[in-house]
Amino acid sequence: MVEPSFAKRSVINHHEYLQGASIITSDANGIDDNEVSTTEGHLISYDYLVIATGHMGSKCVTKPEKLREYETYNGKIKSSESILIIGGGPTGVELATEIAVDFPTKKVKLVHKGSRLLEFIDEKGSKKVLDWLTLKKVEVILGQSVDLTSNSDDGTYKTSEGETIMADCYFKCTSDPIGSSWLKETSLKDSLNDSGRLMVDENFRVKGFENIFAFGDITDVAELKQGYLAQKHALVVAKNLELLINGSDGGNMVKYTPGSPTTIVSLGRREALLQVWCVTSIGRVPEYVEPASFVMAFNKARADGTPFPPPDISFPKSNFVNFSFTISKSETATQFSPNLIKQSNKIAGLGHNEINKA
Image: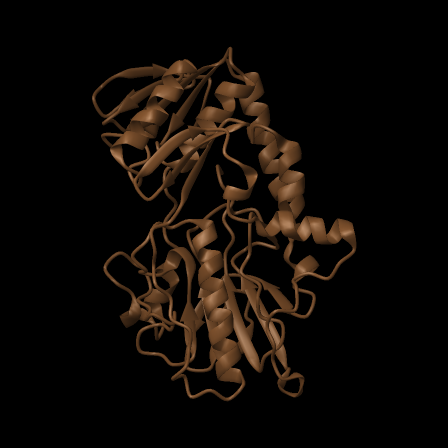
């Protein structure tokens, strides 16, 4: 949004890296014991099913649409003198810091309904980020929400405490809904918890099913929901599928144990907040600390002319039929995508890739 050229390097088409797959661009709307249906009328049979629908994100489908969306947001930022950001999670904080660094003369206000920013980190880390924003002249309002139905054509917004905010534009950076509402009408409805997340075991198999896996934000795994952790989930799922397809009875499947994750929140172009265990710091974080980006790795492989992904998963070629990856209204991936399966019987993957800061 702040730098559209970065989007051109970050958004890639699924067909560029899923070269051995059938890609169906549609919403899934039904699941039974061996088949998935979509809103476009497709019926996809499967022996194994992987669900990675995460959170609901942008409605853009194609790469040009997504790039235009970023360019539109960038135009709003450039043409505005005052900007309102709603939400003090990672997306809101990172957007505020990027604008503050790249456009230091613009007036930025960030409103967050919580008592502190980035509530998933410790209080010391939240305070460090607040101090950083204050130093960059970003006004932070905590403990309030914004009534977007109250804004008028003159850019006036009302908070839950009756405070008036003037802004030329706003960006809503609150959490998107979990992408599981469609599952409530399927055979997986009893596998959803009260928060709408799929309950999975330590092998990432969905509760009550032997051949259906789920990973990423849609699961009830007790840990922070971050992209690099979803990549770790994907490795476990891929290995377990490999074992099952190669004849395992499931007794030797890989188990996933949530750990104490490393948290990195970027602050502008060159700084970041890093939290490891109980240690929190802000500064120039070495590049190697940040979890590897799928898209960065893909772009490097494409530039070098080397195969991608590396052949680290082995399936018997005689069993190869098809790997269908059904994407929720999107032909592209942003940041990372869980492609680790190259050969299988019939593996259907249901995925939706979020665009940050949308």
